Amino acid sequence: MNKLLLIKNAELFQGKNYLNKKKNYFEDWYFKNTNIQKGISFIPGINIDDTEAKAFIQIITNNMSYFVNYNINEFKFNDIPFCIRIGNNIFSKEDININIEEKSQKLKIYGNIRFSNNKNINTNIFIPNS
Image 1 (cartoon, helix red, strand yellow):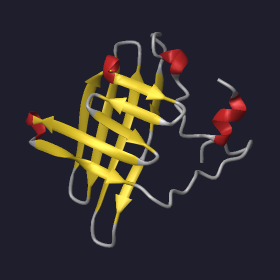
Image 2 (cartoon, helix red, strand yellow):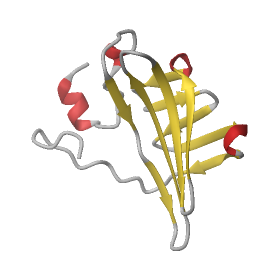
Image 3 (cartoon, rainbow, N blue to C red):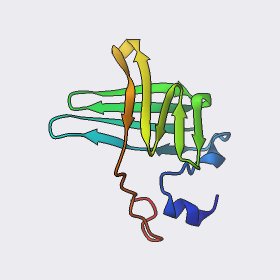
Image 4 (cartoon, one colour):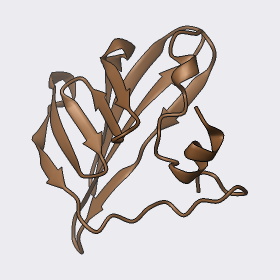
């Protein structure tokens, strides 16, 4: 992928070359959603090391944090338009569609969050992914 495109679009998946290798690699995306009293954040990502490759979604609320693992084959991405899919969960610049049921953590969360007035990450050649 063109390095200039990645600098201008820091949200794009940069680890395509690592998906089928046993090299250490980690990448995630942070979706923070708050109002004055409450917040929920979703962090979809992948983690590859010499023993396993997995996708994950971390969910952080005001009171708790949850970590749900997925098979790496359930991780899909699209650059244009930007979209990350893990299992039945979709993350894009426009919205999040979440559908998680994790019995061992007593976690059941589903719904849709739509975004407006998005702010782009301020990047430049010296700070490509601040």
